[in-house]
Image 1 (tube, rainbow, N blue to C red):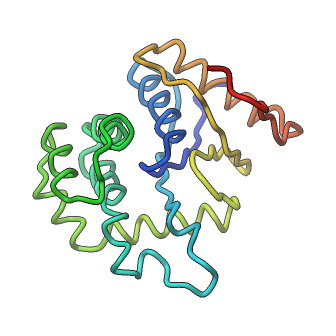
Image 2 (cartoon, rainbow, N blue to C red):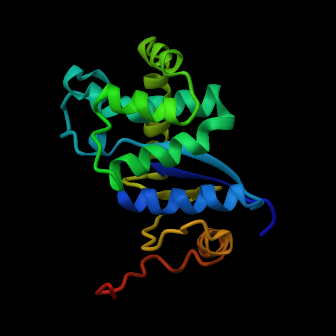
Length: 201
C-alpha cells in the first residue's frame, strides 16, 4: 500500500490507544510513508446516557477534556512539537500515573516538550479546541459508527484495534505493525473479529 491516508482515534486515558499511537509516532519519525490524521475522541462522551448533558456542555467534565484540547492546540498550532507532546501525554498517564485533569501537570508536559504553556492554555480558554474536539468526535460517530479508541478509519472503512505491544523505539516493528493493520483493513473486510481468548504473558 503506497502513501495511505487514514485517521486513528485517541483518548489519552486508553492504554491501547497509547500503544497504537506510539507505533504511529515511531514509524512516522522513522520515515514511514503514511498520511495520518490524529483524531480526538471522547470516551467520556460515549458513556453519557441518552438525554444526558454532553461532556462538552457539562462544566463538571471540563477537566477531563483538558489534555485532549491541549493536544489539539499543539497539533494545529505547533505541529513540529505535536509528536513530543502527544507521546508525553500518554506517558504521563500510563507510565507515570499522573492526573491529566490537573492543569499543572499538563503545563509541565508542555514546558518539558518545548511548548509555551501559557499560549496553549490561552487558546484552550477561548473555546475553539473544544468545538474542534466535539466536531471530530461527533463526525466519527455519525459517519463511521466509532465507539472507542483506537479506531482506524481508511476511506469508508473503520476498525477498532487493540495492539498489545509497544514499539520501544523499534521503527521496523512500528512500521510493520501499522502496515499490517492497514492491509487487513483495506484488503480483508470479511475479517470482522479476531480476538485471542487469553493473553500470553
